Length: 303
Image (cartoon, rainbow, N blue to C red):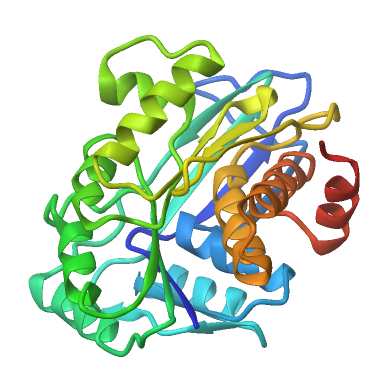
């Protein structure tokens, strides 16, 4: 079983103003709007479902927005096992598209220590052979070492785990030897305080992350594709397709889902990178997350 953890899920409410601009201190009427159930781990579960893989979504929910997320993502491929908080409500993130894009991200509910311990207890149910995906930022009321504590909780088992986080949250997890991490070029720059521009730079600093404990490192490069350093010393690259980009939210999560699915299917790192890249591209070409039809279409054309 694949388990995904989203400590700070959200409903992403997207409003479009078309060619007009949003004006302050007056009433604005949208041209269109849509909403999606968000949070990086939840996104991974939803793309895994498109690839016919089952997963269990873990994390915290609260209030009517938490109910909406749980009811909205649960299906034959996604099992939910959230910790329900008694106070507050799961956050709403507002994305305003009016020429450019402005984001207003909610805070979300407080996570009391007993709720965090209850989530830790759910990790005890994982068995040898399972996969654990820790993805996204952490609520401000969670301790900074929460990912490390989760990995310590399962480290005595034969579990493959991926960490998709930024900056120190990612760096702190490396001592637990994650199977997969997926920084982007900018995040490499932030971690090492060095400009990362060329492919040689990418390979150099991804290699340093391996020296720090990561087994496999994917570096996403936006329109330049992605580079994978695998744990056997191999270097793999994959490009992108030239189609209009409609959405970047969830593209990285989709890549993680595709890589995990590809590796579990074949054990081949090159294939896993290609499927991961196809999923990331497919999401960027759609208003929401990747669909199976779009993934198949992109996969057939990727090099």
